Length: 337
Ligand SMILES: Cc1cc2nc3c(=O)[nH]c(=O)nc-3n(C[C@H](O)[C@H](O)[C@H](O)COP(=O)(O)O)c2cc1C
Image (cartoon, rainbow, N blue to C red):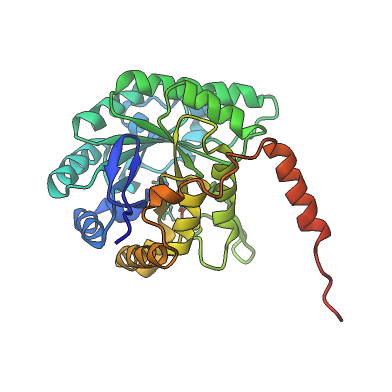
């Protein structure tokens, strides 16, 4: 039987199949079911900087950046009671999950600014988490804030978190950087052991009848292949060029999607939408399909295929990218009408 085992952030994992941060990890029962279904590790849903600061009334960052009015800005944030668990309950949940399952637990902190809230990184470590995913999500709406200032902010936050803990830290990033390789390199030099590509930025819709902004997370589907192609492409470009593990998140729904991720260079391929929509049992089916695919294609292990479709041997990746772009546009055949 082909060997699906992999390593990520120094953790030995039975396969690259890992549920990414989602509400599924809110219940202990689901965490156990994910382990039973074959999850190699479980990433917890995020604990938010604002959620922690709300308790200690330290909302300075958002209230001083790009907002005119302190009082109005406060009203944008969810009330503490709208979160399922308080920060301390989150820690207790990590403790209970560690006692209940033997797969690694990767906790998730979601924030953008350095500050007192970072002490929760150490508390998460003390609660037993095997690693920490740091989700940095900030949409700049201020024309006076330069990109490098925001990148400095991300690096500073990572450095501060790194100082606080000994467990490995991975950074979940968005794809929206002018030079993603440079930002990635800065984060790796600052100590990131893993890069989780990509954070799905929340994209609001409008309800035309109610004239309201619709706040709803979008699930990827089999019919939105672009969700997978973005991280696939960037992992293929960055693989072997930076000393870091890659986790692919976005658009993984089948064994073939996960295999593409590994071939691009991912150590693990994560899933949220597929499990939310079609159930935790999909992990078992996808793992079986992955075994079958490797057998049929005579691969002995996922390690053997890791990075085989990456650009590690391409001497001039930028020219390669541009050439493919030109070919895609000029090679389009018009239908006979
Ligand atoms: C309902 C929902 C909740 C999510 N919550 C979190 C979260 O708390 N932290 C986080 O980093 N990502 C969160 N995500 C993002 C997922 O972890 C994942 O990166 C994203 O959905 C793309 O993967 P997918 O195409 O497999 O869904 C959430 C996604 C969904 C759909």
